Length: 257
Image (cartoon, rainbow, N blue to C red; front, side, top):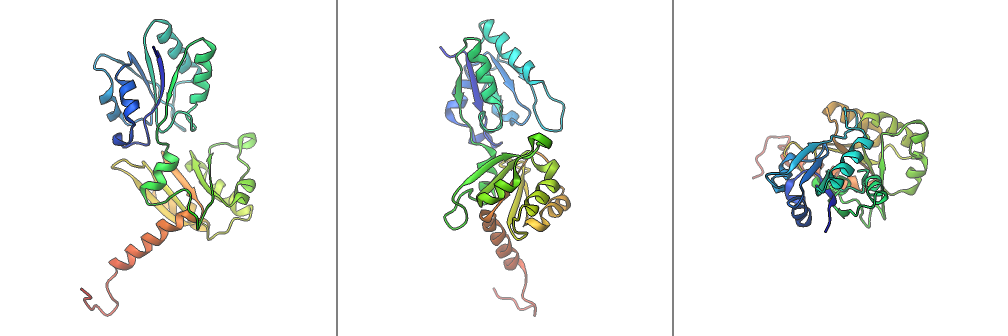
């Protein structure tokens, strides 16, 4: 019998959580919940389950990773079944791989239940496919919060000509944009930033790379957000332009209806 699960809660909209995830959550004695998980998904947990918040979010106080692992091991060894509930997918920038390793090293089996990652859901929420035959033959998911030795090779990423989907990149957006421009990426490259994707408070900003950081700053967008850079973002830009044109009355004031 499974005693531990690593569960992806999806990007935010509770209806995007999988059926398998809800069934596992309903079995757990203990639920360890990340900060970015929509609290509404806890409706699927048992009424008597112990819910422990172990927030992990860039730029905010969080539970140390070794502390989370210690709690996982403590509860399972005490005979309790544990659901480790993470936003998005546990194996996409969720450190689920590390937690799986720790459980396996302790001789504990764990079931991984995938969730829809924000890197796909956020662009889709504003009509951006991460791949498109006319714009990108592939997509690269990359974290944007590294610096120094942890800095992604932006020149190499720019050279791929694939869609760049950047997680945790808002705090360093100016640096990222500057690095991509320095690497030769065109200032006309379409870009998007989507905050709180799939939730009622979702917002986004669209611009070309050369103006992107300033546009996002003026819009007041912050974390959690996903950044999309590449030709696929042109679909959202074109749609926004068409909507703006449709909303603009004729210059002579003539009613065209």
